[in-house]
Image 1 (cartoon, rainbow, N blue to C red):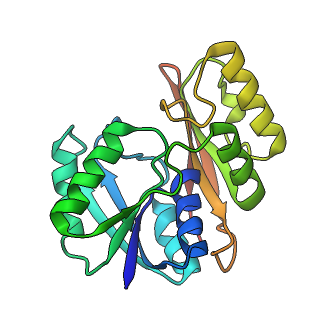
Image 2: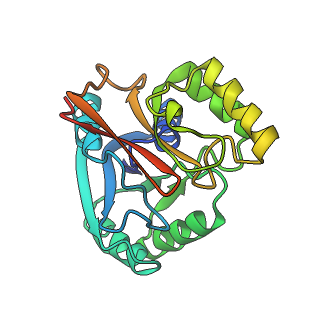
Amino acid sequence: MAWAALTSGGKDSVLAVQKAIDAGLEVTTLVTVRPANPHSYMFHSANLDAVRVMAEVAGMEYYEIASAGKKEEETLEMEEGLANLDIEGLITGAVASTYQRSRLEAIAGRLGVRLYAPLWHMDYAALLREVAARLDAIIVVCAAEGLTEEFLGMHIDGATVDRLLALEERYRINPAGEGGEYETLTLNAPFFSRPLTYASGERRSEAGRHELILKGFV
């Protein structure tokens, strides 16, 4: 039976989809929650237009849920949206956030579906190495000490992983971005029929946050 994957297009959720496919799950739908609030507790807001194209190149359905992005209310909005899907289970890229996973488990329980979280408590270095080996993901938001604007657009490859691990040692950041230190966008994965491309990009910086806004995804 069909599975739906919650994704913002970032490295963790896309890798979770890949692992679900590897495990033999029938992933039919990519679900994005679009928060009006860029500081949502649960959901990323950067470059979400890419997910519709991801679904196209993956041969999957795209389903979007609008949310005001207010704490706790956003989980109810997500649940209402997910209730419209005829699925066996949900796939999440949650790695370490108990806040996120506990709410998804509660939603799955109320909807009578299963929750699949293949990255849960995965070693951060191992996670990054697998992303570098299997995906083409770039950094699109930097919001922590040491993660300067130069990281925007940087691909998560072996060299970048080494730099992130070095920043962990120096600044005590989470190298996988679990504390909101950075956000990523996946441009290619094994289950894509082709890489995503985009027409243009714009950099914005304010109050210690640097963001790469991409437009014209195809």
